[in-house]
Image 1: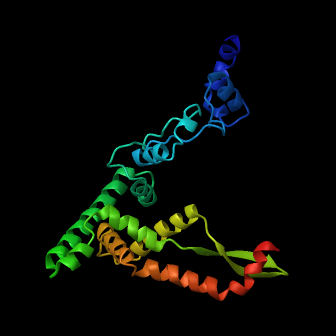
Image 2: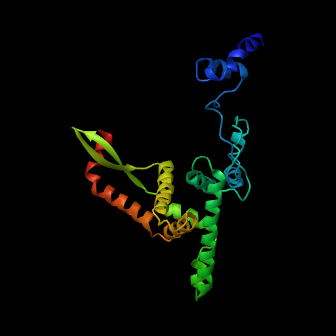
Length: 234
């Protein structure tokens, strides 16, 4: 305890927070920046917990140390991790409330357009094909926009080749959201963000539009450059 009181005047100095004394602050005040690697992420979704119970894997995790959940992690039925990720991508300069309102207005526009199409449909078969849930539209739009391949620049003999290769799930999801927002921001100034974002999501959900075309163009380039695929292992 004497060591803590000895270093407290130094630790409270804001000019020394980025100095080597910050390590003393973490050591004596007990504020580690991250948990050890053997700590597991919390499984807070009821669907994931149900899968563990069905596979009889829940007993294996009973004695495993778990990290505390984040503020936004909840088991509520209204929480959607993908929607939260899209809101974070829309957010600029930390204005998350504004980003959430824009995404909610886009969902409202999707709901209005789909209900209008539903009432204009003439047959029950056409009505059954119309998706009324905006979150389902978002999930399907991102699934249709996710690329399966990517081009990586690899230099061989002084020449840079665009080498095709598989893409990770995390990178594919990032590119899908990024392309949807870029296509939305290419709109005219007379069209507001929620309206244009709703249009792009509806187009991507029906496997059409700018983003799906961009994904298909990337796949064509990967197919055209497949002769350079062996450079990935050299």
